[in-house]
Image (cartoon, rainbow, N blue to C red; front, side):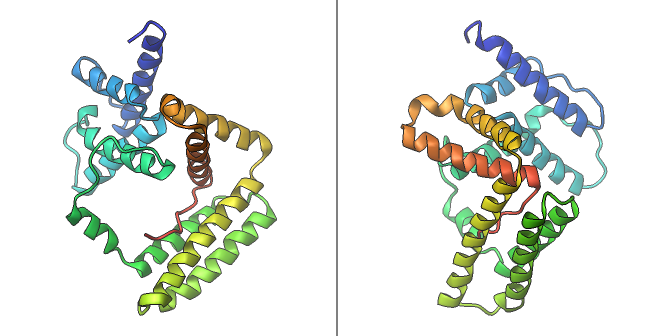
Length: 239
């Protein structure tokens, strides 16, 4: 680690420690010793802070479901979830994975997800996004239109097979793109500029190993993810 990298890593670890403290209801668990080395490793491999936060949050969501908590969570317990979310993020932005792809059983489980269940979850999140406050009338109209179309599709999705099912899956991908394009247009120029800078910062550690075309594509996909997160939009695509 160079002298210039050391302060950045220390700040990264402080941010992780602060997020862990919030998730532990204010109970401070220091990120020191082996835990510091673990988190410094996340920084060294390019895990964006927001990705690490989502991995930590995923661990806590599962922890809460098991019943009453007995003791504060250490950051070490979140390692597998952080790496899983990091893999998902890299896959989403088109970066090579650092670990082997999921095995056949996991892939089968993924493809076995319910299309009607997916539509139900998407509609719930669209309702939440709409309730979160209007951005502008045009974007609200897009949200309403997408919700109406998906509500109609939900009624027939359970019985769809073959070409008809694929047609709906393709339509979901098209609607997802329309929704993101409308979201980009609805956000202010300053907001989009800030998100673009964030997308570049997230991918800066991978820039040297990528062609210009690959990097630009990754930035575009990262920007989509940040816009989606900013407006709390669901992913409509189904794979």
